[in-house]
Length: 191
Image 1 (tube, helix red, strand yellow):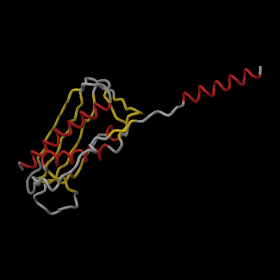
Image 2 (cartoon, rainbow, N blue to C red):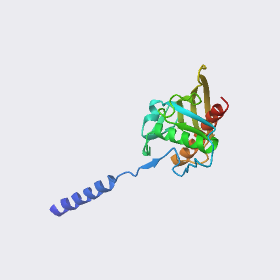
Image 3 (cartoon, helix red, strand yellow):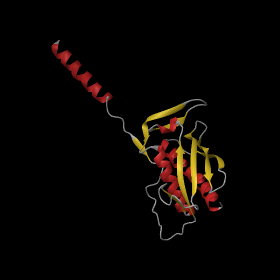
Image 4 (cartoon, rainbow, N blue to C red):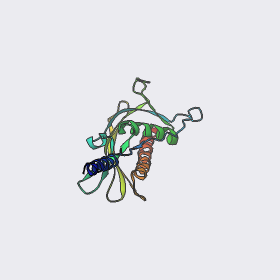
């Protein structure tokens, strides 16, 4: 009888050990670490100060979010941002602005009195993969030209998802950040 109890106890411990394996975490970056800046090869077409980037509370979570219904959002415990999303967005915008449009985002304390630098504030309302098979980037940004009234631009970018999974969704998010960057660059260059 005692040997049965010992065997049952060992079996229970084995099952408990298998059930408590750590969950593998997948980390994602919104910006591309592969980007290589080539400052000497390009001339600057414009400069901006990114004054503010506002995100809704659901995008301040470390977990990636996916809309699973008209009113439901799922936060994945296994798929998380490798850095705060606000940092990733700023890095992605900065990279794309420079790479594609030669618009340089400079820190607020650099050239603080330069009237040729446009101040930009961005408010992201949504950046999410949806149950309808698309990724959405919505919000607005404000341009503050020197000695003029602020100008507001509303954006609503969407891109279809061709595959399932968070990795594919993040790749499409990068594409949408590129569209936003191009719109900002057009405003900077033409202002």
